[in-house]
Image 1 (tube, helix red, strand yellow):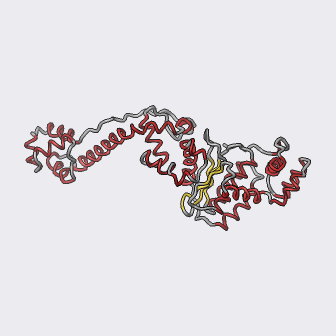
Image 2 (tube, one colour):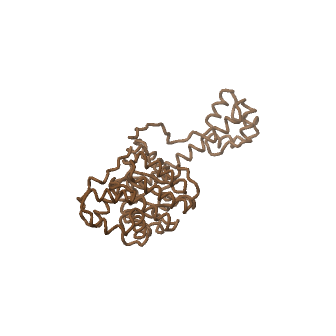
Image 3 (cartoon, helix red, strand yellow):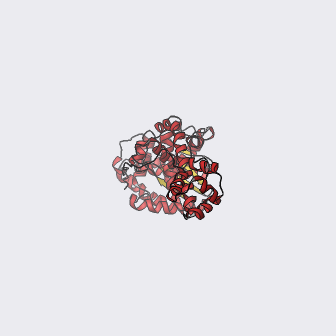
Length: 357
């Protein structure tokens, strides 16, 4: 869904409530000196209130009510609105120096997805982007997404494209936060994975809600987020809380064999790796955790003992027969054959292209 361009009036100044007070005094034909006497304030205090240099206290608001007949709540609200607007004006001045940071964020992609508006106001766009990341400043964003402790455990893509990489993961986090899950239970998750394995034969319309439900019942939120440009990842794993894990999957590649391998790869991270790490499936073979997750996914889908049979396959019927024996989608068996033999053009028609609404 394409975001609509939004136009809104955002004044770059704040009007002190003292100006309204002055207008009320004039309508009552009270001089500044007379009003000071009636309210017990000094003329100097009134001058500071007029200029916005002194706030209207609750006590002063009560006195203004008695002297003018205008409720104290009106003056209190006026003061609160003034302080809020003054803070926003100051924030806008402060944000001006961070506008260049927006160049590192895939703003256009996020706008096209309806996450950010189409506003032409760069300061407003910067605030929307910070709100998307749920941070109060660019410095806070850098602390979360660029600090060395995180960078040491991340893909190379984070170093070259931190904006796009973080945007993809953040979309997954938002989905995960919105998904109600029970507390994580390892035995329940393993049981659910066995059921999900059988779901590989179904269409996305059937397996997606069932897969998400089984995972949620075990404390795992499954997030599906379209791939971002410059982010060549199939999946990622992150613990949202100590009792709630997120499995994030892109729709990159869209072949069912790749999708299911990615899902079970991430499931392996949930079961076997630290809750402190953000783990990204970028095809790395140097990280022992990634190697272990690959082995888990491979053996869970098709036990290694079948590899010899699969290498020896010579017909579609054999692929279909093995898939029936294994109770999985034929496309997964075909994908394994391609991987084991390097014959990437064989049995491609058996590998379904997953289409998502």
